[in-house]
Image 1 (tube, helix red, strand yellow):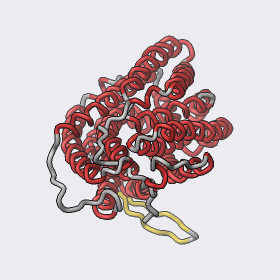
Image 2 (spheres, helix red, strand yellow):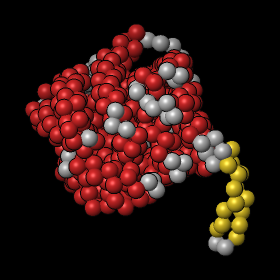
Image 3 (cartoon, one colour):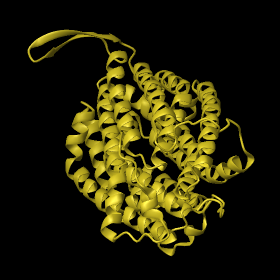
Image 4 (tube, helix red, strand yellow):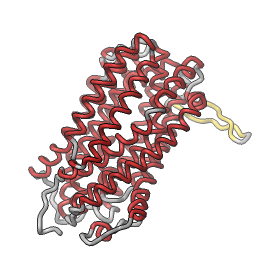
Length: 477
C-alpha cells in the first residue's frame, strides 16, 4: 500500500512549502496516474490491432459507436465527480466523518445511475449505428458491440467512482495500478473472445490457445469482463483498505439533501459539458461517415493513436483536481493557485514532448494498428496535423482538472460549448467536402488551440478560486 500523504503538513495555515517541494508533490501524484493512462493507451493499441486484423469493417464498426461510448463514459465521470470533489475538500478541511458519508452516497448513486445508463444503452443499441449513418455491412457488428458495452455500464460507473474517490483522498497509486490491470485483462480476455481456437508458437514451442471466435462482439465481451473484475477490486481497496476512506461503523447509508444538492451543482454542468463534447463528436462522426469506410476506420485508429499524447495530460489533470480540492477545502487559496499553475505547466511540457514523438512516429504507430495500407497512409497524415495542437490541448485538460477541484464546472462547460460547436463542427462541416478527413482533423487542431487559450485565461485570472462547494464551518478546522 502506498504511503499516505500527510495533508496536515501541507495544508496547515502556517505551512509554507517551497516551490520545489510543491513540484515534488505534483509529480508524486501525477506520475502513477500518467503511467496508468499511458498503459491504457498501450493496451488500446493492442486492442485496436486485434480488431484491425479482422479487416476495415470490424474497425469501422467499433469506430462508428465509439463517440457514443465516450458520451456514456463521460456522463459516468460527471456523476462521480460531484461526490469525489466534495470528498477532496472535506479531507482538506479535516472533516473525514463527513467524507465517509459522502462516499456512501456516491456509491449508491453510482449503482443506481449505472443500472439506468445500462438499460438505456442496451435499448438504443439496435438503432444507433443506423442513426449515425453506418454502412449496411458495418451496422450489425456495431449494434452487438454497443449492446454488450451497455450491459457493463454499472461496473464501469462503480470502477470510476471508487477510483476517483481514492485519487481525491491522495491515493493515486492504487487506482493507477488497478487501471493498468484493467488494460492487461482487456487484452487477455479479448484474445480469448475475439479469435477462434488456434495454435501459437512461443520460443519454438507450439501451444493450443482456446478462443470463442466472436470477432467484434468478442472485443466488447473482453472489455466488459475486464471491467467487472477491476471494479470489484477497486471497491475492495476503497471500502476495506483505504487509510482515509475505508468503511467504519457508525456512518449510516442514507441520502442527504445537502450532499445531493452539491453533487448536482458539480455534476450537471459536467454532464452537460460531456453531452456537448460527445454530441459534437457524434456530429463529427456523421461528417466522417459520409467520407467512406476507409475514412471511418482511419479516423477511429487515429483517435486511438492520439491517446498516446493526451492521456498523460488527463493523469496530471487528476492530480490537479486532488491538490486544488484539498487546498481549497483547507482554505489555502494560495496553494490552490500554485498547484493549479504548476500542474498545468507540467502538462504542457509533457504533452509537447509526446506531440513531437507522435509527429515523428505516426507511420510506425499505424503500422502496428492495421495491415491496410490505405488506412495507414490516411491515418498517419491526419495524426500529424493533430500533433501541433498538443501543447495547448494539455493546457485545457490540466486547467479543467484544477478548476474542477475548486468546484468550478459551469463556466468551463460554457467555454467548451462555444469552442466545440462554434469552431470545430462549423469548420469540419465546411472543410470535409473540400479536404476530406484531413479537413476534419484540421478543424479539430484549430479548436483545441482555441480551447487551450481560453482555459489558460480562466486559470490565470483566478476567479475560479471562489467556487468552493463545501460549506466552511468553524467546527472543523
